[in-house]
Image (cartoon, rainbow, N blue to C red):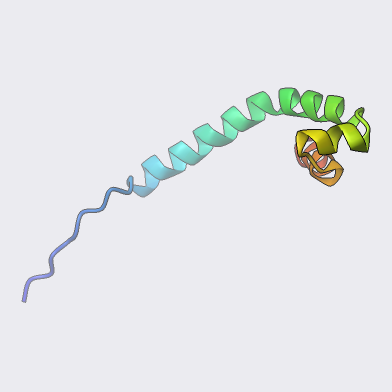
Length: 67
């Protein structure tokens, strides 16, 4: 008879959009640091990277993503 509106723990669309925007801006603010770290890792040999458990392709993908 009556529709019951169930409350959820999800924020309203405007609040959700604001959270996404805030997260994107934070990522953008740290992207130079990410690129710098990835470039330093990229200077390492494949053997050094494998000792750290890092694949060279992951480093290259990160550099491409943030440049």
